[in-house]
Length: 375
Length: 135
Image (cartoon, rainbow over all chains, first blue to last red):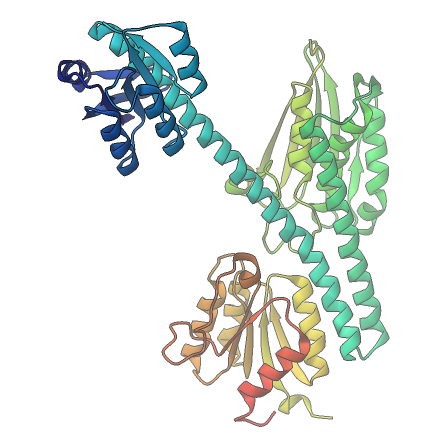
């Protein structure tokens, strides 16, 4: 990437202006680490007044400013310049390199000093340093913007997800008000449905709290010896009823306890999410297999279902926030879209890894690996 | 009680199951026969054999323009079938669709209602659009 940086050279000596121009006209600063080449476009001003005029009219990145100018002195120009463009990098050129000057110029926002007389090499080195600073500033700004954008997007999606159940329950209440409900069976159904949407909303709020606590690192972590086998058994108990209703059989043989040192509630989130997904996204009369194994380096937890599966495209998005696979088969399945994103964040806290393989209409297998030694 | 044969048929398309359920209940209580679909593809299959008397379509389903595309299909079949597009897009993106339904509008719909829809508002629209016929 090649960028052009605009420099305004302000000096009352013509020889100095032209000398600087000559030294920088064809100069290119290369920053391999920042993947950036910078060339320079120069403009010249012979007095403080002219400099201020040019700064008012145009956009510059760097101001090379002589301290000792006839009318308006360098410090005054510096003040004006920083007023006009707070981001402008000002390099003071001075033959009277006194501490006083340096202090007052720095106070007014000068970025660097160049003591006259200087060689073209010294000039280029100073400009190169200023340029690197400019690039880093720009990159930091870009990053901050990106962060704001991501945050905005997250909040937009979140508000959409929170508005949806409110809208649904409102709609059902409106039906009562408009007197459109003619039979008890319909009434029962819409009450059930409204309650289900409210439950979903509560789940979303809890998931959101989990996620933000983990992200912010404010969650108190209680490291203790936890039996992964027990956690799986508990998770299976939680889904037993809904699995039985749909004829789904659950398979897990706890041969060992598989003791692992971690935070119980975090590990519960991981295992409960994977197990409940395996039931939710299964077909009727399907199967769920959970396996745990351990070798010298890691524990491996596998959750396999015989469910609806995913396409390649869906797999790619799987661990993102608010990702819900929307298709004919998932339409009636409730979910916050935060579960797997939270699971992934937790697994990463343990320096672990999570991956999924899936085949459309055949099933999905999630594999979590947790290192035995996290030091 | 109107007999099944004389009931007006409404095609209701939305990927939101609650919206479908609520509007089916409401429209049935208003004595319509409701045929509902969850997606543009499902609606297109239905339209192969059915000519509805009215269509209520969500604008954004799997694709952001599914509602427009369906409206176009329906109008091509019979331009006199009233089409109501519903969308949450106005409240979420602050896009305005104020030219909808006006003369020369490129969107072939007769009305655009922002979600959430009030049943009374929907009823008024339906009566307005179907008043040429008798409903």
